Length: 352
Image (cartoon, rainbow, N blue to C red):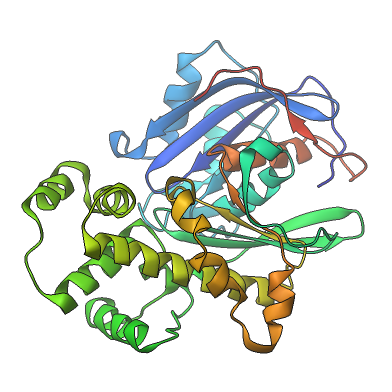
């Protein structure tokens, strides 16, 4: 992912999700980026992204920012978007004017993650399928508060991410039980997208479907956990560490559908260079992902099963990948041409 750069310039980057925002200041080096200061914020404490950025900049010494980029969890049109799962309006021109930044561009959060893939190390990734190493298109799928998808197109020696809203495409059931799930969700929402299944709320939807289908009372301890911690984290943790069968089966169903949609994305984009699984859920359920149903569903594409079995599939473990990717994209705004690439993040700043 290329860029010509001026070393020493200061960049502001952000990863603005439905639940949290990560912000960082970076110094641009010749072939990398040095984090100067990183921070994370719970979005529920603020009324908009401008308040978050204002707090972040006030917490540190004054900084002259040469360029900025924010990855935002929504479609971006003309440098503006409304967060899908929070309804904050994020306006790039307004933020640039408010904070005196000459160049500020918004990109989709999955595009930001895709730009960040290039600076990840081996410790930042967990392999689900080794596959064959190829210089070709890659794809990214990420379930968290919502479901994001992106494609990383390969052109010669350069890679260029492009966003999509594929997570809002129609959910396609593959068996009788999933048809029942579709009917259940259709009664609740009308249109049923993959995000209604593959997300934190989606896992809860599957759990509620199985619980209602099977009957029986929810265990009192689980009801208390859900009230105390929230439905998605309680169901997810109970599925991995607890004994409730509905939670365990909900997670298995979730993982199987997740693998199937990852395979769909690989086919649509001919991502024979690799598929990356991002988002906040995958690292938390990694042992379950490794048990096999994800890859089994990923491969089950009829005559194309052989092709899918050769595609590397890796889970992104570093939660700052989108933040780093936004910084990589911001570095592109400070120069012209595509002669060099940002190859690394120099680990200077402490964790957000």
